[in-house]
Amino acid sequence: MAASTSTRLLRLTLPLVKTHGFTRDALALSVLHLPSPESHSAPLSDAAITALFGQEIKAEHSLINFFFDEGIEHMKSRAQAFSDSNGRPPSIKEVLEERLKFNEPVLEHLPNAFASLASSLSSAAKLGPFQVFSVDPLPGLRHALRIADEACYLSADTSTELSWYARRASLCAIYTAVELHQITSPHTTSQFLESLLTSSSHLKKSFDEVGLFSSYLFKSFRAVAKSAGTL
Image 1 (tube, rainbow, N blue to C red):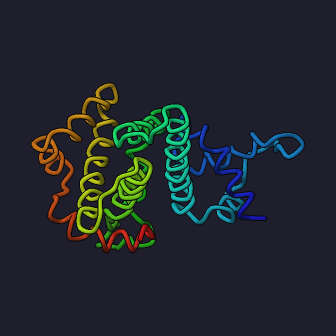
Image 2: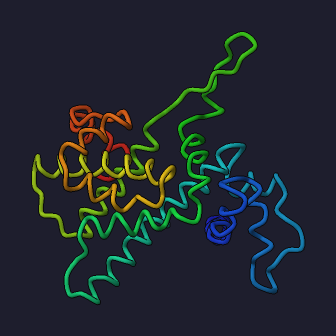
């Protein structure tokens, strides 16, 4: 029952992210939007949020990860609709564009979301009077990896063996670069995506800009995919 309740509330929270961000406050307000007769007259208490979604920053992470999961479902549903209408699977570009559109209502909150995922209160260390947060790039990489893998599947990509890994590693880097670009320049996102998919020189530049190098991605891709549950 708790899992079902938390999922329902997470879904009700997503429209609230636009104005409240990926926060415990947004989660607290979700119960105000339950249908009658389940609706509440007051937001969830902090204790209830913790019980349903986790302590401290973990509740935010639950919301962020649910948003990512819903983004994957959005890709699937839009790809199916495209296939039904056109008699063919969508291209990689068309699939990735749909996922990027899913970001649009909450773009201003994505930087804080990625920063939250990359840091952890539980792993923070004390250095004299200061608190030092460890930074973990893997959540962001797993996010892009899931999208790259799903985009290949939905577009009926036929890469095999080493090409399978190379294709997904490249798309992982491309999507990471485009999503970062989208946050700062949303009106040119589609053009930037197309340039990275079609131009090897731009692709190399994208690796440099986001700190992801093709050699590192290719070597680490299999291990990251396994840890993310993709393989």
